[in-house]
Image (cartoon, rainbow, N blue to C red; front, side, top):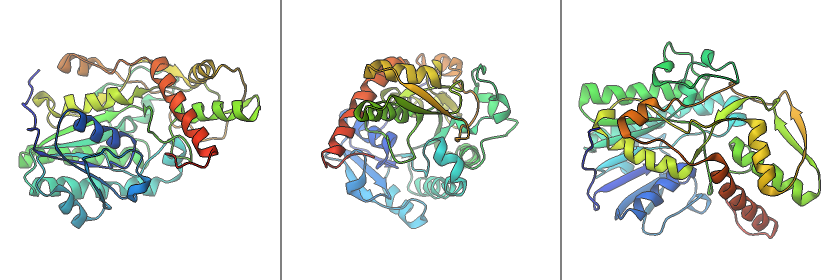
Length: 341
């Protein structure tokens, strides 16, 4: 593995999408590592950001606008673009145009970073970029980085990610700007979306168990038959992985999986949430709900070979932390307090 030295502690780090879950956690990650100049950007009004870290410059800018990207990247040593219009499968399948429009963000951000003289640029891609023909069986084989081609990405969101990856590859090959590309696999954890339609399966199921306990209703709605499979990566593994991938010279302009290889069914995920909540619920399967692919898992051969590391937080461990955080949020909302939604 070939590592770069990384930025100096007083170099400017720019993080797009920092009002959201992963990028907000990333801003805190770098702040906790001692970086003193972090510029966090999101189009949401500041009071609506999921997580704001004291000492981090926080700006409300819509990064689909070119001028805003130039303002955001001015003076940057490193740029991390995690800004996108996205959510769980319910959002991705219903709002494909909004997902596709996120290509404006990366197009403008990577050009602004290049013009600003940034040394490195990170793009948050997704496992949705993989060929859907390989994901039709819940007992799916884990997806390798080469499985994105021949291309047959998920409509909307997946195609936006795949094309944006190409931009990152060409800015290195043609213009010499070091780029990094991580294909995220279902990130979850505290400080994330847990209600409102954009939440991912772990948060949605935790919330449903908490609601059932609170209401005394012994029922829980599960989208699909529950046999569909996924892997889920805890947020702390994600932020560490971003740092490692960004600063590995062997991975310049090279898409790589960033996800757990622990494959579980949605039914198993619900079992875990019920165990944590201390309840057993009757399951009502909503067979006409948005489901996405039948199965998806991360092949971590490449990341282990190059970085000597892979995301390794057990799902049961991360889910317990997530459940208790959502339970606090749920109770705070009932008490009329402001919460992350």
